[in-house]
Length: 415
Image (tube, rainbow, N blue to C red; front, side, top):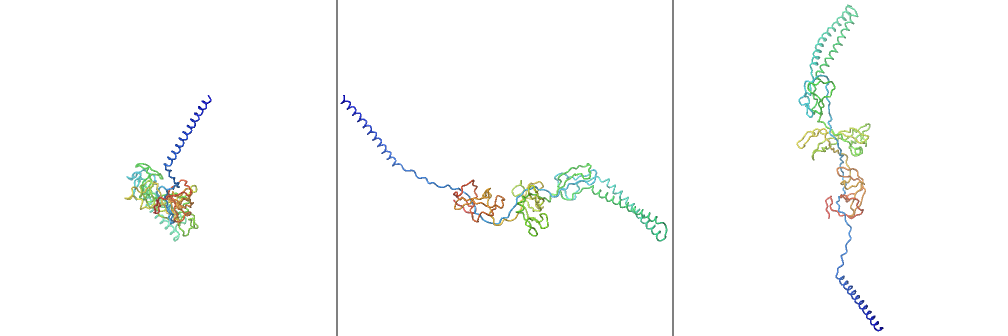
């Protein structure tokens, strides 16, 4: 039994050793195969880490002198608007055939006529009475002269008789003057029966019919003189003080003449007027005429721009004439900015800073903005000539970020 047990255990030991050797060989072959396969595989290319560049457009700073224009808005108004009312009472017997709103009445034409029968009668009666009184006055003057002569030279009559003759003469003179005045008034009222247009005007209001009875002072017609138009435009007082042009001769720096209390030194510069609802090119010329008022609440000056009468009428190149009621933009030339840099408004941030390119790196530069107009900002300090300014709109870019300039708006293109 003992010998058999020993043989069995030896056999078991040999099997274990055999299994271990087989496993070792498998592992060895696997490792060798893995190494061989690994040697056949090429290593991946190493990725090159590069800094991304912002694609931007730029413009080079250039210092020049630029005239400033103040852009304001206002409504066109006629300067002369006349409300017509009869000066006498009576019945309307005649009305102009074109007395309707929107019609043009020429100067000298009769707008309407009031029944003149009563006034003709008054004039005729006054003239007849005046004729009689004229003769009566002549007789009274003769009687006074005769009584005075007889009393002084011939001592005929009494002094009281002379006084009575003088009193009668003066009374006749007074009555003659009263009748003469009444006749003049009657003739004036007769002339007032016809209401005449005093200028070429447009009818804007009519409240009048033939057969209607009118009273003195009753508003019946409104005439508008469209030959003289103005636009009252509000200007911020800060802009007005800084950019409006005033004569220097005899005026102080604030625009006031010495010993004077209003803006009489305002330079009447030519202005360009554009209808805000018109087509492109729909414009007229005008002139800055005067300062109308200063509003303390809004801190604005109201300026009057007088429209050139030659440009009011309808022209072949224009679809509409400039008329009352149009809302227009007005471009007023101001002073000239000296030695400044003009940039697109988008290139300047709300913090009054710009992005510049220095060695293809972004740099933020604070600037002083003197004026903003027409999509441009005018820079007086913070930039130097030939500085490269970014015009591409960027949102919170990193300082010193790498830039790739795509286009130089001064004429150079880069890739």
